[in-house]
Length: 461
Image (cartoon, rainbow, N blue to C red; front, side, top):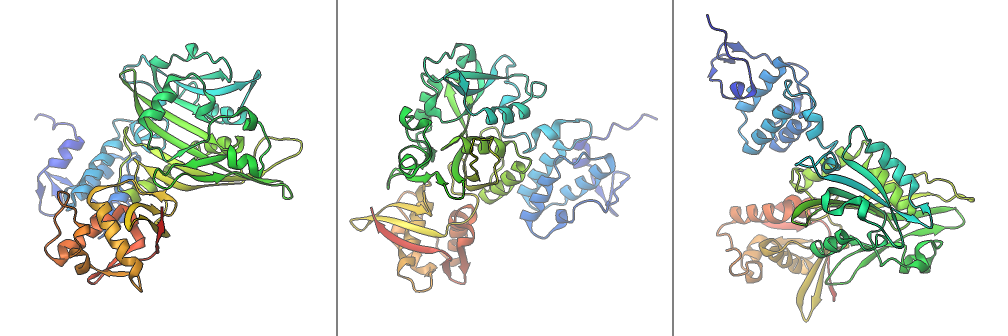
């Protein structure tokens, strides 16, 4: 008798199901260690459970059980996530799950280039023969080890008369700028980044010799020691570093950015880790190498309704604090918290807005702010949000009747979307375009009304 073909994921997924829980003669027995959330009545909970299972290192028996669950799964998105997780956990492909998990996602472009010929680089500034941000370099150097990231080299770029030759800019797959991009002079990549990512939410004031090494004071924070949140319609919002001289404590802000641009006809990944002061730069390097990062990203991705892949872009604003020692000592970050996190230019994925502000000029809405963040999404979602908020400003309890919105021509711009023709369709529209992944818990649908659970206001611009 010929031996049966080897058991594979593909065979298990498509084996005919027989009565009694038997698949082509194989009895599938559920294991008690499988997460209970895989059988939750909530599809979102099941999807998250499958995602968390991706790197479980499954044995054959567990794999059979999971395939049985997956074949009975009614939700298409959950099935898709389940297939991905099973492929990640295939026991005959050791090591792949770890590589494909969020644990290595942030620095994945630094592992190697697709053609194996291009390199990656981490660059920091060398100032008057002294390397700036030494602590940050050490932190990244320990994380991006030569053994695990053999394609990544570390370079020191002089603040004056920089020499980019050894870096090989046109042969890079990825580059990490440690410190303000403005300090890296004569770098074509910075110019391309500013051009292609002109809508980036965060940046810094121009580099300035007068302020670069100065003590943190109120004037220095206003001019230089700050992170600038870009808002084209209403002007930038500055996040100012601050030092309490009596308590010897500094509060700083830092940005973490991960972008992909086209450089020299090829894709180039750029990471920026930079603070308003050296404290923020070190905290950013510490945060991106923290074991807590995958969980933070996973929660943000869930709220944004996204899955991380090679095209996912990220912007984070960190708030940090530490004791300032006299004489100076290495920074020990005592508090570091992401205040804002944006994925692919969406809304802040950390929390729903507390305030929605309509910027009004001549009775026309020129911009919308969710807290300090200028809304960048357009089209039908933007039109619906403006119409909802204009009515909510006048509402006594934040509730706006859905029928009132259906009759508002401003909510349905010609050529973008036609107003739903019944209440259920309207609820689905507002749920999909405003509540889910955008306003989230700041908006609820109650009966035949939309209720905003945040402050709504109008301000002249």
